[in-house]
Amino acid sequence: MRLLIEGVLRDFVPIKQFRQQQQLPDDFGVAWFEPKDFSGLAALDQAGTALNHLRQQLLAALPNPIKLAQLPIILAALQQQFQSGLIAINDQVGLKEVEIEYAVAGFADVNQALLYDLLRHRHAPKKLDFATIYYTWLNHSVRVSSTLHDVVHNDRRWLIQIVNHAYGRVGFIIHMEDKTTHYVQDTVYTCPAEGFMFTLLSELASNIIAGIDH
Image (cartoon, rainbow, N blue to C red):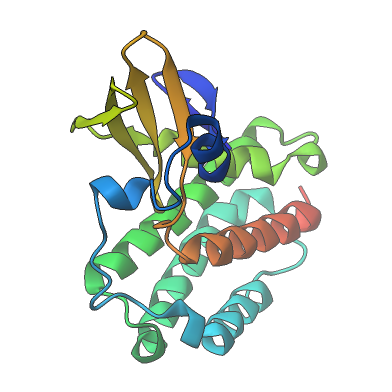
């Protein structure tokens, strides 16, 4: 995993690999420093059928062909349909109102980024790479916690900061006594909606790009 930290893309080492390198216990990770309260959280694993139906509805709503000049209107309609669709199935998902608003905002932001890139590359839209658009957006959502967790391991002091992005806590940064810095991936608390959102947005983008007709 590569994340943008202070303007620089950093490679994050998987937590299991880091534990082995540093001879750490199997439960060392984000949960040590900022445990998560799972009470009242959404249950996406029980809403797979409903979410898949929403995905199919959104894909079916795309016209073909698509005039680039009409795309802002099309995307606004998709955003509204996504929001109303989430609300309609929320008895099965269990999202809080603020979580629905957050999901809709992310949906809109990624599609807006797609629109901007399509406008910039209007003469060669088929060459666009959605994954690049998506992960650029995701990287710009990265935030490093200002809280420093103080840990002593093998008589050495570590200062640890949790790293978050749009889908939750994804790892941490360890500042060692010898001035070295380690970037560690730990996605134990990452929102399970990330996979669904990436698939949905990727499929929509692919269909939009394929359907563009100036």
